[in-house]
Length: 314
Image (cartoon, rainbow, N blue to C red; front, side):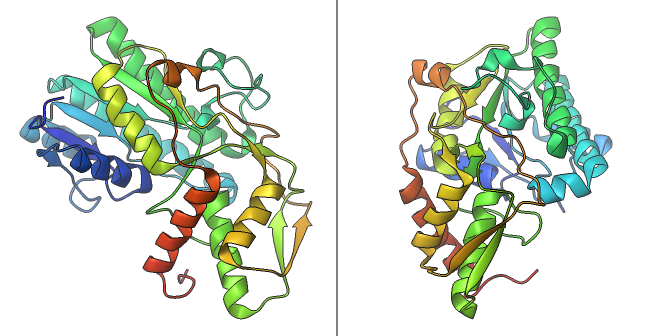
């Protein structure tokens, strides 16, 4: 990409898109275009095609998506599949039809099998059954990844995919029911601290192992790959380090300053038992995550407090 290349960041108001937008600005790119959902509904084929035909972006970061944690995914499987499939197919197809030089598709580590060998290599895609609680979202993301691959194969495009592990950071979603585990914990312990609650109950038994990547680290990788990587195989984005949900919970409570009791509701689902990415491919390309989990959570909590004087309303 040249500094004046026309770059479209889809989903710039989301956590990932927002981080990519900030990183592009930090690196001196000057011709970045964005649209809010009210300005452009990417689930509309006609509106999406009209936008691409009019604007003709040279490069596209496709970070727009409907996202959520276990509860949100489980409660709205059809919505998660339909909305994400429509966004992806409309945007990728319109980019191709209107001469986009390069597109980068953002997915999720949930595309990999539930019982995948660990750490998860890119080649393990479609080698086993998916986790049921987010199967619909995973199927949609797999479809987007594969559509990029098929366009490359059939039409010679240069469309790439990036699959990050669990993300957190500036601009995260702290909804009480629809957020991911780390922002949900930040909100829950913040509320408990403010209210003086003596205990907090968390889902599952705390045993699952997870990996967390600070979103600004991901954004740096995304811009780097747009400039330095081409290929059909996706690229994993993560730290390669894992932590149990129980230890993560204790760490968040410590950083937030909550010193009450923590209990576990084992009637609630754990999700995938273990999920850590093999990030050797990204590292071999010249990238490595910089932000430690402790430092990242501190930054995320500062962002949470700057956006909400107290815990946000529903």
